[in-house]
Amino acid sequence: MNTIQLKAPAKINLGLDVLRKREDNYHEVKMIMQTIDIYDILTFSETEETKIQFESNDPGICSEKDNLVYKAANLLFQKYNPATGVSIHLDKHIPVAAGMAGGSTDAATTLIGLNQLWELGLSTEELQKLGVTLGADIPYCIMRGTALSEGIGEILTPLPPMPDCFILVAKPPVSVSTKYVYENLHANELKEHPDVDGIVEALERNSLSGICDRLGNVLETVTLPLHPCIQDLKDLMTANGALSVLMSGSGPTVFGIYNDQDAVKKSAALCKKNNSQNRVFISRPVEALQS
Ligand code: ATP
Image (cartoon, rainbow, N blue to C red; front, side):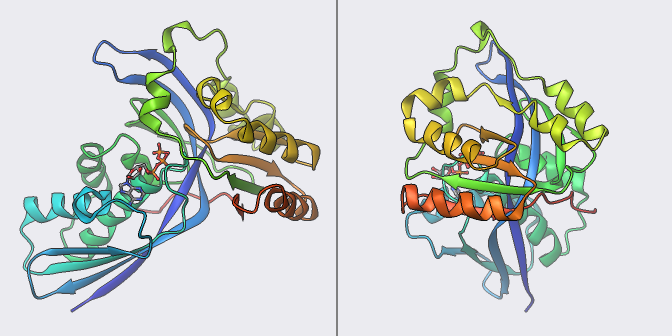
């Protein structure tokens, strides 16, 4: 019986724009996605008993059947009727409900892992088609790296990798519901939009300063007024050497981009000192998965 262990990486958004709310209530987005090296670890062990078992080190995570890992495994299980079952362990490190696509990356990595374990022979595109039925960000989490994400998140264009840098990630001790944030965004009345095309051009020029000059996220208009601790973290990073700072996704996670290792370490220590319940990580950009 085989066992496979895989890392499921988190993402941040270098740019997040909402173009409009569609008639079907989905939001049309234009986002720059970037994978970073903060990971959950998933272990898939084949079992003789043909069923799916799921457990996690995080007692706070939602129950077995509601978990995206279970849902992704069950999707493949029902469709391909494998000869063996699987026992899945999720070692959770990515903060939950933080704007870092933690659940989506776990689901994406489950599709990748079980495709290997059960030798299903599915292509990346086939896995992405299955993944989007569980969540709009899952196709991106299968591909990883730097990408432009459009439509409801399912239209993906790979972009040149982000220039290497230090990315300080700080998650304050508040939770934000992505659903709430989108429901309270007045998408059709937004006056300012981030320069997402400019970020694409900066990536093509390999210009870190060009990216930093243009970071922007329209969801800050909803989440920042709710949680002043987010602006506090942004100010702290800006005052301590960050080239640029932004909230990721629907928040509340804040990230700062640095090119100086001493400055990023000092800022990380200050984020912890500011509130010992802040979860703080020093990370780097990760490139796309080779398929
Ligand atoms: P996004 O950036 O895609 O909006 P997020 O980082 O804000 O996502 P998640 O960590 O994915 O949020 O969690 C959102 C909700 O999904 C949680 O409240 C949780 O109940 C549910 N969920 C299901 N499966 C998982 C999982 N494997 N890890 C974390 N959350 C999960």
